[in-house]
Image (cartoon, rainbow, N blue to C red):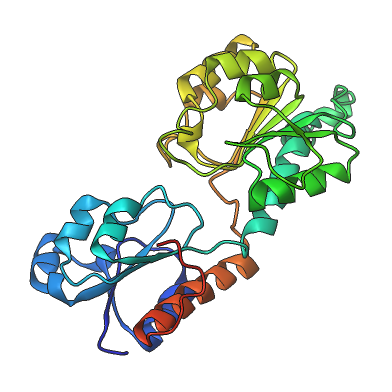
Length: 313
């Protein structure tokens, strides 16, 4: 398989690069001085593309590489891949579900605690020497808060199980009510928000879920409510979120994702009721290695004509 051309458009993970280079002819596009010329010269050699949450395979990319057979994504989200076109052209697509579920769910709980208990602001309070001048102000209890989850898939379920350990009543919204689930179901996101203290975005990004958290939903969540986004930035109407936080119409937010990463609205920087993370939901050594192994194993399976481990298309 050493002669098989695999394209990695942007840097993703050193371990993944090393494992791919052991097995394939890896083209690291970002390292090349003339990317346009390289693509022109090697377009027919590329049989696989490595995607992630920032880079994938849109229609232009797919049309550029006539011998493309598989897109193996180093992420679970598929919003950067034109799945319909891949299906039409017989291009296989894989992702990395399950291996990142625990880390993302853990982070969601961490964000809830960080926002409600003001952990980041308390840390800065101590470092700035302010504790010597007086105790930090009282914060808000997490245990028992009503947690609403948008999208009760793998990650949504993992978040709900963790929140239950804090005696939090769970409710959810999804396209349809889930069989075998005891949690309260709401048929609209607005109704879910109105009956939640904390609203967690954990669904896949599609055209239907883009801006699923809009002004109506934010106002329903209200001035004591907290929004946690561990999904994708475009799930939330970001200008409306910013204005709600600045104006005090929303109680707080814990964000790991943004509309135009790595750009983050500067209006959020000075707000102590907002915790901002740089899209690190799956960012642990253990999980990124597991994701990388899954990417490689899917490629090996494809080129050895074996069943894919985690097929999407």
